[in-house]
Amino acid sequence: MEAHKLICEAIDRFREKATAVSHSIHERPELKFEENFAAEQLSSAAADAGLQVEKGVAGLKTAFRAEFGREGPTVAVLAEYDALPNGHSCGHNLIAGVALCATIGLNAIAKQLPGKIVFLGTPAEEGGGGKILLLERGALKGVDAAMMAHPMDMEWSTMPALATKHLHFAFRGRASHAALAPWEGSSALAAVLEMFHAVDMARLHFRDGHRIHGIITNGGQAVNIIPELTECLFLARAKTSSHAQEMADRVIRCAKAAALATGTKAEWELVGGYKNMINNLSMARRYAAHCETLGVKTPEAPQDLPTGSTDMGDISHAMPAIHPVFAISNRGEGTCHEDAFVKDADSPRGYDAMVRVAKALAMTAYDLLAEPELMSTVKAEWDAREVS
Ligand SMILES: [Zn+2]
Image 1 (cartoon, helix red, strand yellow):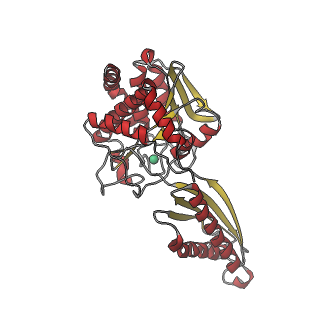
Image 2 (cartoon, rainbow, N blue to C red):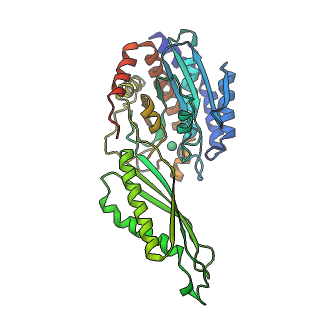
Image 3 (tube, rainbow, N blue to C red):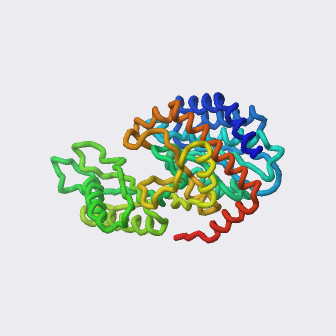
């Protein structure tokens, strides 16, 4: 199709620039909500291509938004660009590159687009839930379908991402001299250790494929003082939000039990949570068909595939959405959040994949605008979704 060809040619012409932008973001990793450099690079690249870019969207200073085309069906292409403490170990610089390339490709035929494209910069996927804030504050109003793509060590058109409940706990005990008068104190450290043990005992009862993991963020104040304050974080992950809530309730019971056993006080707070990903198969299959024409087989992920979680899950509960993953490393040689993946996210293989995936995504977006039957199938599938 002529439009597909024009989109792909524009992306090929933009390859060098997109690679430079993605590489520069990789070189300056920024944590959630601090992605000033990345947001500026992406906004400037889009502005250079003639787009009107709104910087700072919905009260998030590192979010940005541009739209083009005409009134009609609307598809959003989402960029992520935050890093982790060990750098771009989740390859979000490539997610940004994919979204930027796809946007540039679609903008090349802006006048012929039978609808609208929204290029949305979404901060803080890693624990900040930027997309949830953007969604709640109306940045995706009027959008009919949303898409992005994430690097991994595999090639799938869907990703069964888990729902999460992110909990913070604090234990308050009583400080005393650890040698002179330990009987005067009550140890908040004993409480937090007891809690981890209780959570481990509870593991047997969690459903298949669910995950619970925690870290101690404050283990005490001094070795010779009975700790009066300790803190920890837990992330409960399940296939649905309601099952994640079941796990969270159980973890809270573990905290209460630990406090009772140690004579301390437990406090807790829900600090965040993502919904599970509802993969729109009608969109995913069209994306996979375009991948195949570009020479890469992209099957649907098995339902029991171990995966992580993403705030794209929340988007997928608000509108039809896809979050395919693309391979930039080999299985067993490094995947998301591992140190080895940092290099993969800035490799020739990574940038080749970025360009290819951007083409498949952009052609899928175009099809959604140009084929009313496809859009109505996508919407009918979303309307029939199961939410739990
Ligand atoms: Zn990620």
